[in-house]
Image 1: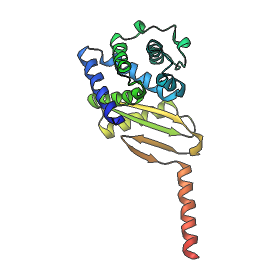
Image 2: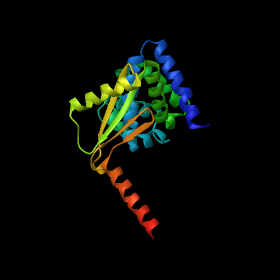
Image 3: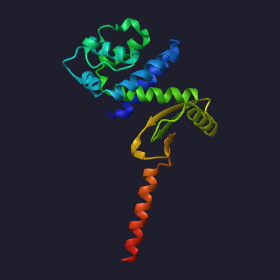
Image 4: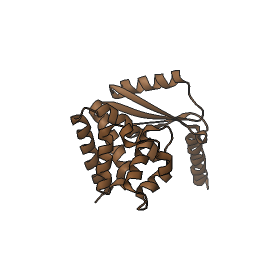
Length: 201
């Protein structure tokens, strides 16, 4: 079965379950943290796919990842966080995912859940990439302006520093990218120079 179909099926069920139990906001916060940890930690993803790691240990890892500032990469690290210390509905759904042996798709399920949640609540998400950190004031102005452009009730802005763009910025929103980076401009100038020389020759 296609990954997208599995992810959408579980994410829809997860969101519907959260709505029915009145835990939508809490669930969203936990899923958002878990998604970030799954993205950042290859070792956590490997542990979820390992047949050696028991289901109880995987659940502990996931609960720890959803409530900690740094993803845990072993069951020993997760022993201090018990499933009862997080949202009960959250652990129930994770248990269902593991019972159906779908933990390897959990990263995509989380991303799809977040997408569906943002659609339902008219939340926009933008990603600003700069060569050096931007001030909170600049980030807030960009966030506010982006929200008004796409008519979002809420707007989340993710900031990222990437020195490789040299200067300028990249701004991604709703599958569109505004590329005003110095690195891209240099590439374009170089390509124009190459093309012009080819015509001369």
